[in-house]
Image (cartoon, rainbow, N blue to C red; front, side, top):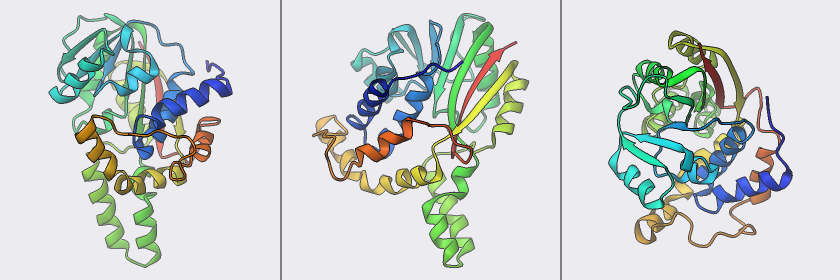
Length: 268
């Protein structure tokens, strides 16, 4: 059951991400945050793919979560933030937790990066209590074909070039599982989940803003390396931020033609 979020709550969610991340990342994370915030998340939470802790800090779940990530550098940054109750460096397919020990697991924009994802889903199922809930968000099959670069190349009649652009973009993004919801549903059922629900979000137009933003966000990478911050001077009236336009994505985030999919599944 969805919780209603007020305009002030959505505004706060949006600004948390756009003020701390490059806008192309912040806009997507803000939408995803607004999806998780619409559900009750029983604690403690198993967070698969903790990363640097930015998302959990904004979502407010870190203090009641065990953060898991296979990479040391992000774990180290998350530890400096003091976001998580506990952090562990581990692979998702070998979770260092007892069987049936968590009522809830989340994984945000992580599973698409794992080449062999089925063992990870089975481990998450093992770690969840009976009737435990698993919420996660991933880009879907539309992410490959709706890219702005692909659209331009196809209009020019360069179909092969469009295919190569899609392959290159998603290789750089380390996307391995850009699948339709039906594929994920089948994987989840095999892993022991039931009552799988899903909703698409992030329309193609927004995804293309994200795509082009990768190049525009290069200065943010420099600032992060020099000053430890992605955004040095956050301002809502920044002419390059288009805050009001991006904020509208949170009002009604679900859309049939969305390029990403949000799932909620319960363990048998």
